[in-house]
Image 1: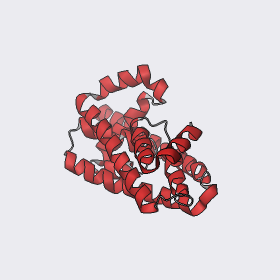
Image 2: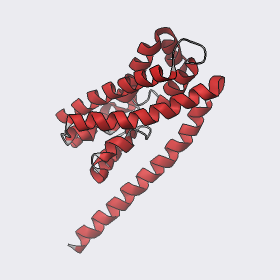
Image 3: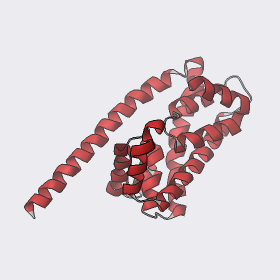
Image 4: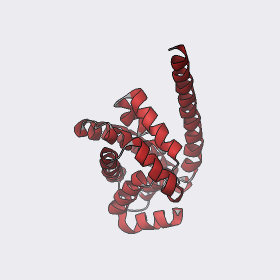
Length: 202
């Protein structure tokens, strides 16, 4: 998949970056930790610029996020989990991933959209509970742009700085993602324990 992504980006430049990042938001198996650093690397040997790549990637991210936000407005959590349970294997998304994103949104409110845009996998799925909650679309777009801009700027700038060694970013992000997933799992566990204790006390 990585070779196909990089070939597509090299062929279509800014449009290719926009399209790939939009797809990455809709289909999480497409990794932003490949697209963004490689986009930064492309600025070292093509006419693409770092600000231009950041702008294209941010626009693509928000476009993809709006698609999932719209899906969220049409579906309930239960219905979406049933769909993911049936088809999620193809997308490499599990019902638990939907539950994590939903819990993150309801635990941290609208700021989950901002911070969630900087967490692998959650950065895509956080748009769905925002849509389900019918979050104000203007606020959703604004927070998505801010969070996405930070994430994109960091990864693209690192890719440009590392040059041909841009692939090392994926390894670092992979470790970062594992830590984040452990933290999210701990939050879910703590929340479940507290909920159980409250029910038992009542």
